[in-house]
Amino acid sequence: MGTFLAVRPSPHTEGQVRGVLAVSSNKGGVGKTTLSTNLAIYLRALREDLPVAVVGLDDQKVIDRMFALRELHPGDANLKHGWAQRSLDSVLQLGEYGIHFVPSPPDVSLLKMRAENPLTLRTILEHTRWDGIFVLDTKSDLEALTRNAWHAADRILVPVADRSSLEEAGKLFSLLERGRLPLDRARVVLTLADRRSRAGALPLVHELSEEIRRRGWPRYDTELSRSPRVESLNSGGGRPLSILHHARGTAVHGEMRELAREVLRDLQALGDGRLGREPDVLWGRRLDRVDRPQRLTGAVGGKAHESRRRS
Image (cartoon, rainbow, N blue to C red; front, side):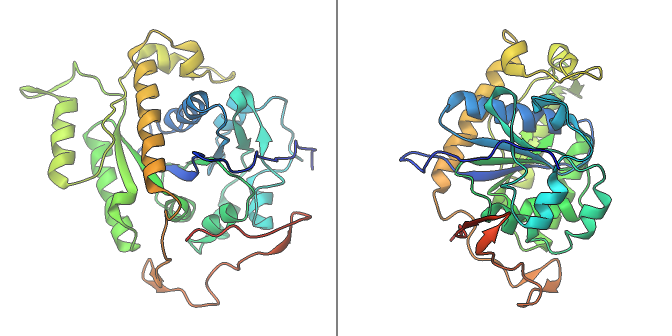
């Protein structure tokens, strides 16, 4: 495996923001990865003392291409190795814009087989020495790795761009209820909002907002506009470019800044008692002592450290 920069975050200081954000939608094309990566960059820009790391739970390599400072090779450590070690300490890399990231696995099918217990990722993050924010970019599905992200997250951001993605968001909220997760853990984010598109007498974005309100789903106030300039930042096979550095002057630039501020305030309001007690039954299956992930103490990835527990 390749050699990686050791992660040694600064000590926890007063006013430090900590938490786990997951971006999840069963619908492709709603700007999920664009939201994940750029939200991380804006969070870091707003708080330069705040460590931010992005973890992609798929094998599309967009995060690798956006943040890697050097060419990644097949033998380099990636998420698969961190999953096996039950800690991301040895696989986190410092990347572009001061963002840390975990290289994507070559194939997530084997990783999904190791994610049957929905609390595994939560345990992995608890035992990673990281006093900042994790942003989890999920695959466009509702399967095992995505459900692991839901259980690990303090907030789940659910992008909604049209009626189809609105209905897919409904499936997500239904599954959260089935998994005995609080529905207010999730927040809808209207993305790719085109205020020129109309649904009858009203713009489509207004119709979507009204339907979200009618269904009682929590949401962030900030809406992210559709922008051809922003969409061009991810085109081609080269390095995806950030909105912050390459789309100044667009409406989305200001909207991303406001959304990042909303998220920071939200995480600060959550405080230290974020996730609460684990339920005894998840997805219709009772978790006894055999099922639960082991609490790791002592040596992890060759380094001894104490487990960090969430209350």
